[in-house]
Amino acid sequence: MELIKPGTRIDFMRQRKFWITLSLVLAGISLVLALMPAGLVKEFGGLKIGLGPNYGTDFRGGTELTVKFKKPMDVGALRAAIEAIPGFSRPDVVTAGNAGENKFLIRVQEHSSLDDKTMQAVRANLCYRGSPIDENGAAIACGKGCAAGFECDPATKTCIDPALDANKCPETGLKAGEVKFSPGGDKVAARFEVRAAEDLLVPSCPKIGEKPAGCNDTGLPLLRPEIDTKLRAAITGAGIALRGAVNDKGQNVDVTVKGKEGSVSKEFRVEVQLKSKGDLLLDELRKKLGDDVVPAAAESVEWVGPRAGKQLRDAAIKSVLFAIIFIMAYVAFRFDLRFAPGGIIALFHDALVVIGVFIVLHREISLSTIAAILTIVGYSIADTVIVYDRIRENLVKHRGKTFYDIINMSVSETLSRTILTSGSVLLSVAAFFFYGTGIIKDFALALFVGVLAGTYSSIFVAAPMTEWIDRKWFGASATKIKRRKSKAKTTGPGGAKHQAQHQL
Image 1 (cartoon, rainbow, N blue to C red):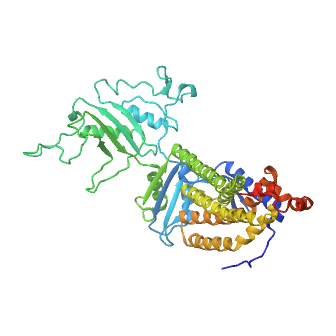
Image 2: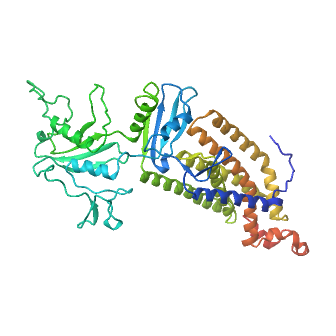
Image 3: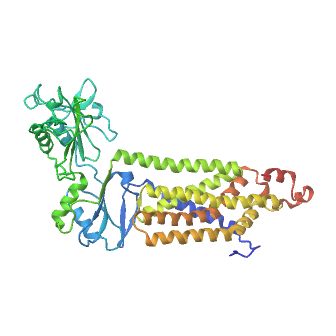
């Protein structure tokens, strides 16, 4: 199928300075916006325009809940209700699922309900002297300055909790050997060392014979009642609410013993489930909107700490850069060194344009966005390679023509294929955008913008840059033949120098 009549020649290179300038401006604006503070938004005449990247929970850290409400809810009313709750900032509420399903995706920046003071109080109640940690999970050095309520340990040069109260934590009393908190603030793990398992656990019932009163027949390690009560009091005494988790039998399982069986080991790890930031948010919403509107629990709760978010963000950037570097090596090997820079500049252009559109539209940039950008990089270079391949063929077939004319000829000859291929992809992606929801819609938007940018850059960025590089650093003999007709008459239109430089 030919949309463009064979033999048609369109002078794409005539306005190359305008298109290159436009591309540089778009890429530059996108780069500046990407370096702006995250989440920056300005309102112009009632229209919100993003001026900084809107990172998703994957990259910025935070808590994400999928909640199916019992009654219809308005996005604006739900967002206003969350904003009115102390301790939650910049809530992001989007519709999830199908229309009429009353399902929403709620994201908040906060990922943990525990601060340093709260964790210090828990450690003190469990008779353990520990250290505050930074976002990388390392103990804070004294040189950075210890927060109020902490001391500097001269031996380790790190900040540490104050000395334990001897009255609350006698030498012969039960003490935790280690206390750790999950990054999401939904669990506390304490390690205990005892002389005998019975000092901490309820004795297991014998497998045969009469079962003594009070023995443990659950088959799982079970804390002694007084130890269980003391442990719960240590947590709640620090102002932390337990989650209230129950098993299939309706038994409370907030406190569980993990690790080896009691008969094998004298060291046990006890986990206590706490109310996460997502649980606290639902509790507050039930108070404001009522139990007949807000469900008892969310369908899913996910959280990402700032450390993990930073690692994911760095890994995403590296993945895109590595992909572009290897593509540059492929193009240089497949064609010629002069072709590679134009293709790589076009790929950077495509990636930046997609990111810029997402920032301006205040769309969330997440791992799915990075996946879409990697897909676009692959699509764009495939489109560029088609044009480059035709340029290489025509350089051999039409030795007497300038590089300028060869590019116009090659792009014109591949234009029908470009329109058909890109058009069919855009139609498919548009269907996903209009009928998809949530992540699918954002992924489709990134692909739609990327395919447009990739098609445009193959014609107006990659090819003109290749011509400029040839003219600037490779002698540009092909582009000067037309101006040197007098010399061409003596040496022939396919002179030795010209043939040597364009023989691929």
